[in-house]
Length: 499
Ligand code: ADP
Image 1 (cartoon, helix red, strand yellow):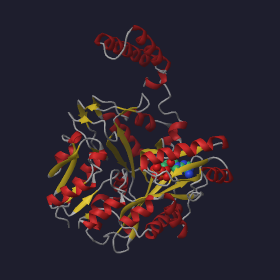
Image 2 (cartoon, helix red, strand yellow):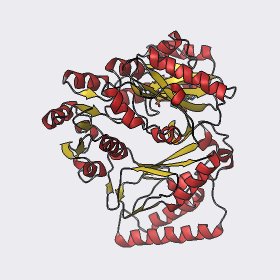
Image 3 (cartoon, rainbow, N blue to C red):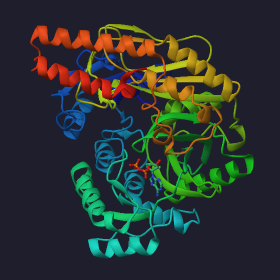
Image 4 (cartoon, rainbow, N blue to C red):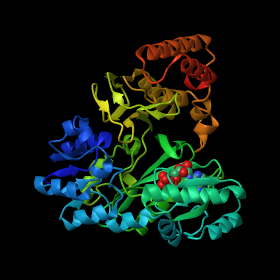
């Protein structure tokens, strides 16, 4: 096993990985930016080193600096977590060149799967169905005519895409040129690559993915599926395992396709093969994520397998100790991603100091958190502060526990998405498992107002007091006229901010 591991990440995932190392009795090294000096992962690690100023481009993404810390601390392995350098083949390669084990797959597998059309081709070659679509096309006119041939709606997608960026839905021919331009420009600024292609847009699909574990000796297994259809702007916010949409037969077929996909990429480590499943239960390969996923805890909860620890064992060259037959599904797990965002104000980030924090606990509750009371949530990074997970013998019990845990969760000082999750957990269609990737928009989760006049009045009084205080304190430009306008706007937007 490794002598010392550097965690090239921050927040909850850095804490999660430090915990795995502690159980494996491996000392850890944390890195941090100046904005994260007082963060939880720094406190949890055995050693911690500052790698630069707050912007990630000057700290968490500076490969030279990270390798320098690794060398000076005698680190022999680096876990990249997710995001930042996790899917950067150059980083994986440079670790190898420095005789440091990258706790993830090979640079070649990352590169192949990081390019959406190369990945699609690889899957087609081994008979895994992919969403119908084109190769990459440089000429906008040619791309537009290929989209037309495919019939609308279509989706323009960046080959280097990730995090829901660089994609545009096109429903009519007249929108196509502008959509191509917008997708290219977003892809260029987010990934430095404006190459795009077209996929058929599937209406109301489910996003279902399979967790893979593969060792360096050619053994590949899957750890069943996760249902990730509850999304905002193509980004997952609630996940569960298993999926209500799969029966044993479909589970077996998709699981085999996922294992075939990993074998085709000569994959080792933990990884995820993502699929879209349409209403007729046809499944299509979407992409493979060559890293630990945010939502890995729900799989851990239903299989009892610690995926983070398995990653370290695989990276150290150990053979998988579990076979496909050993993987058993036990109960049901849910995950709610808790963000420092204001769900009543268009999910605006809500950085700031956490004044009070009481995390839920009790039977079947797991909270993978990166914060503590007194911690200041910085503005510079992804605002996810914790992942609240619950386990139950059935889906109903898991949801009941989630409702109970969300109710117990007290975070004061910043706004969080807890009220949003509470609404989803009480939504009839969600409770019936009747979901798809457009569920949140279709159900207008944050648009529906409560009929309670009392709540309305309380909120109006609170708003009036707030505006009065602002104008007294002379904050901003809140003069009487402005105050009137703001108050009117708020009343007009009643449904948005009255719970
Ligand atoms: P990213 O790499 O940016 O995460 P993905 O290709 O994984 O992008 O897609 C993210 C989400 O976007 C999917 O879960 C789904 O909701 C939606 N999506 C992507 N491609 C399609 C498609 N062809 N049809 C319908 N929805 C899609």
